Length: 412
Image (cartoon, rainbow, N blue to C red; front, side, top):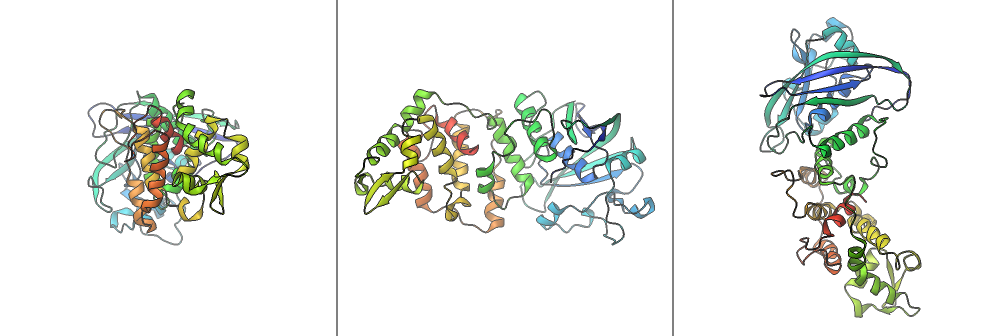
């Protein structure tokens, strides 16, 4: 869900404290008070690093949770209907207030904070530690208080919601748990990116960062937004927003076998396909060459633009290996995306003990009813990586540039 506007608006600064932790742990948020509570929930999940795959609810210290007395306050609901719960199929009594036809509108942030300042609370219940749907884990309470009110502003650079700062480390428990630490610059970058995706309009927006997840989105078709967010956060911590630039000499060496074959096939008579199989057929599938009467011919656009530009060929291969573009495979690339993640991790010790959370891929397979890639498709990708000298025959990175190529695949 995205909340974007260019209208003149005021801003509200809130401090949210997390209960049940040893050290003071809090976040400061600035929000448009006209936003609904669903937007506030989204901002809290982002700021504290909860993946959102669990369930949440609002309440106060002196009113029932879920706002079952909402009619006494007017025609509003303290906590609105949340479609992502319906997507999981949860049917617990505590998840939702009874829906009355005359009481469908949700409270805005301004209305609720004005009424319950100092008493408003947010509860987040994690998914079970075993990752099973419907099983609940730890419950985390957050206390919300107003710390500032700003005059209305019409600046287009002012986001409708943003994190200003905070302190303390949010525990990460199980696969669903929170991510990152405030002292980690990579985590700050990841949160800024996610706030920009959700709310837009930030003056600190990462240029070009909002439209570069197409291949990964295709690979996780069917997974919910929260699972995708957790995956993005971990990849950003790996450096996916600013992929490592491979050494030009390494790029030239890695692409040399492919450029040599394409250069031979660029001759007017082409080359015999049987003499260069299976690599020649791989190049045809990747739309770098064509086959006619058993002979391989380099496409004119490839001959003119890529043969003498190793960096451009490198980028093209990264993009087409993860999303070849033909309908039968484009939406079936989770195996390739996970292979790219393994390349991106390389031999690095990711935050000492953390691994990239991959439950978005599991959910994509489960919810979309898709089978995994056939051996021929996945073997083609492994074969190309091996020809480039980036991996061994099993797809394990063995070249210093392998990590850079994996990140390039994920950000293509």
